[in-house]
Length: 159
Image (tube, rainbow, N blue to C red; front, side):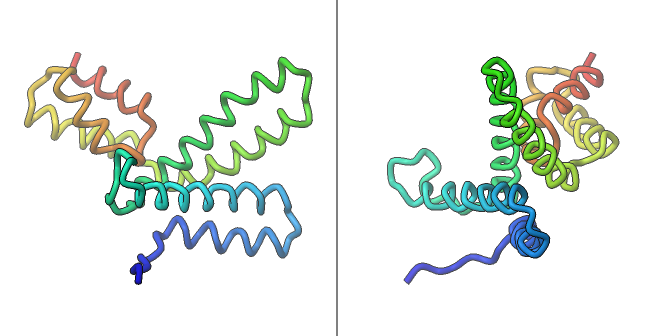
């Protein structure tokens, strides 16, 4: 029998917010949050497939945040296409979904000072070489800070 894992705080929050949205009859919020939980579940299931590159790796909370980031990115890519097609209804829906998803990410994001502290430690260990520090910073801060923000801070601090 498969062992069930403990839910991460983000998943508990999503489930709680789905219930609140159902009570408030906010269908867009219900659908968007269910879709995110489904995407997290799909990633976990995909890792049970021997052909999957991350086969057997347990799901982490950082993975859950990466799913959120991926869903936001999908909205970002869809909005200009909807605008081009003259579908203002879909543009508005995608923008509302994006704003909703970003609210979950921002709660978990590190501040610039926290990012700088991590980068400073890595520079101390590795020296001021951007090509050495950046991959380590990206790996350590994955899911905790936007990649573009990390890159900007590493550039500033290694220059």
